[in-house]
Image (cartoon, rainbow, N blue to C red; front, side):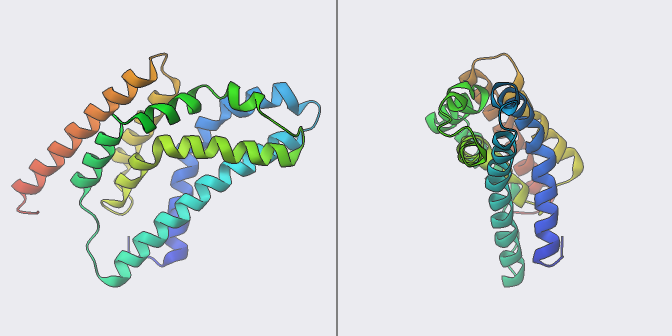
Length: 197
């Protein structure tokens, strides 16, 4: 990708919307049933708070990518990013964020103001939980700019599985960690075969 910051940001925002918006739909539905009939602003505020967290992260990644390209630095090695993402899957922070992301009821019950401001704060809090869960996997897309569609689909399925499969959060996080580490090994071997470092 050789575009300017606005083009790069547009692609990151679109990618994040496609990957993360479906993850928030069950929580939005739950919130609409619980509070939306009394004040629809709660749901809109939640959606804006959640989208704001991921939009900020997307713009940050676009800025990093544009800065690296402008400085003439090569993109980060995909294998190293996959390795880091794979190792993060085994951390207690990953497990804690994944648990909150998968079970948002506790956060929804903490709604302090049943209006758009309360929804905005709640959406931001929930977005931070999801970001804590997924940021390392998202960084792997820096390895080759915006990775090939097949790789993007693989990452989207990996994240959806973490969120939706009826499996213990630690088990699914570690299983996905093993997949990412295997992918890192495969990418390293491919680089060695091609003479790249």
